[in-house]
Length: 160
Image (cartoon, rainbow, N blue to C red):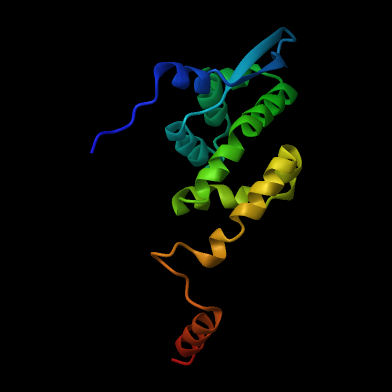
């Protein structure tokens, strides 16, 4: 089966989706950083960094700067940059989570964090509503047991 390859100009348009963030270095020098929208494959790495609390690595993935570069920023600038990385990429990662339980395992805890929902605004609320069923209905190929079946199994296990 042949694989579809997007035209080069379509790939370029995807990769050109960016946001520029005004920053201050720790020494007070003004700077800017460009945050890029990540590709599908990069979003999996994004989710791993998000789940592992690897903020500087997440910023590095989104900006192209090395993780150590984050140490040169003021805390406020780093926070602004991290927020921009989330705003540009988190919704796409959550969209992938709708069809991939491994991605959902990384993303769903953050969708349930009220502070992150506040940062991301309406997009996160919509994504949360769309993915809310991931933890309860499961995928058709691996259906979750009915609540009563789970309760019975727990009851039987505790009686032994």
